[in-house]
Image (cartoon, rainbow, N blue to C red; front, side, top):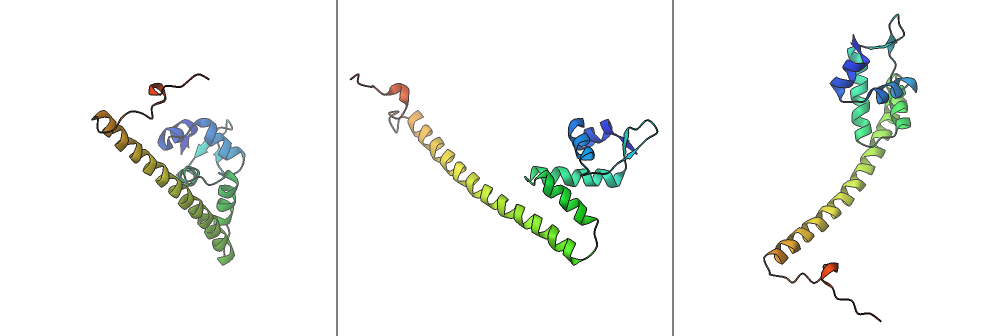
Length: 135
């Protein structure tokens, strides 16, 4: 069994985050005689999975639903879990496309700055170099 502090150090999560997950019922924990949360390996696995899902951008509500579905038997529960993951995959693919476009823009700007540095291009797009006429 582990304490809240130990679990937070293991998983690199804040105490506030772990308390929040337990308070809203995403994770169910046992409590000791002093009403302090105590964590076993299974709960740590659930927390690790929750952390990964949050890092992927899955909403707290979807994670809570996902965990509830994991406790249910049958193909319907599995199908619903799959739907949550497929929805998240679709979102991740959209984010990846946006990130690729940002990276492409950044690479273009880097190449241009290198050419300016080596005096292969003028630095005429720099706003501080532009001369504005007063009207």
